[in-house]
Length: 91
Image (cartoon, rainbow, N blue to C red; front, side, top):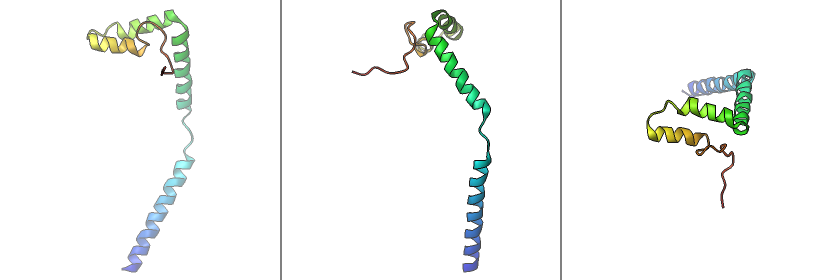
């Protein structure tokens, strides 16, 4: 019985170590970095260009017919037409 326990522990240790090694060998996803850059650029243009922002609001919120969902969509852009704030203001 003790031999079976030590064999099981050795197997568990080997599996644990091999899992850590394979995780370290996985290269980072280049598409993820590109996606982050594209999202940052989109947010920057959305905040700095009122006509682009209005067009995106119309494209994304215009077809929404439910009043509550439409209001939520508009609020996701900053609500009243002002650019969305990145930082919440607390007093």
